[in-house]
Length: 193
Image 1 (cartoon, helix red, strand yellow):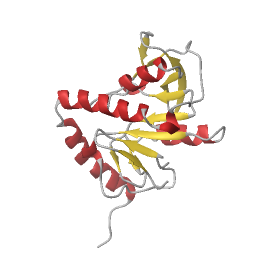
Image 2 (cartoon, one colour):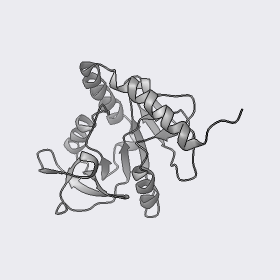
Image 3 (cartoon, one colour):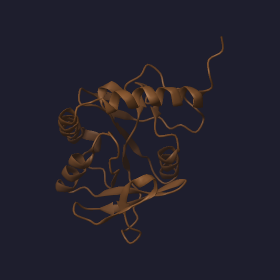
């Protein structure tokens, strides 16, 4: 029996892992975000990288704000993604900046915030595998953003996830970009990418 094509498999996996992620207790998610931030801050490859691109959390995603605020406190610049469908732009961010409602309901800096080109990206995801495979929301924004940034300079890609989001194997399509590492509340995974 032939297996379904990658987009069909991804959609099926997306639904299964969304259910696992959404079922996590709010207090657990809060504590997980703290642990993930702590782990990321101790990662030597991220220590002197600036700027770092992040995202404003939606749904039950790992909240990167504790990590982004800590990066700023230690002197690194942080930018938030701005959706210019089908692409992403990166705009300088500081805690307390006024954010606007952008594409897909995501909070993002306004167009007056300075554009930057991150050398590291904190990447949201729905599911991941240990080879750096990632399933996102299916629009390809982060895959295109990584590809675009890589034409300018190397980019350290760091997926932020809960351990329950791990799957055996992400179906990979030609446009997919593998992550360099994934940080969960339980461990820091250096991928084979």
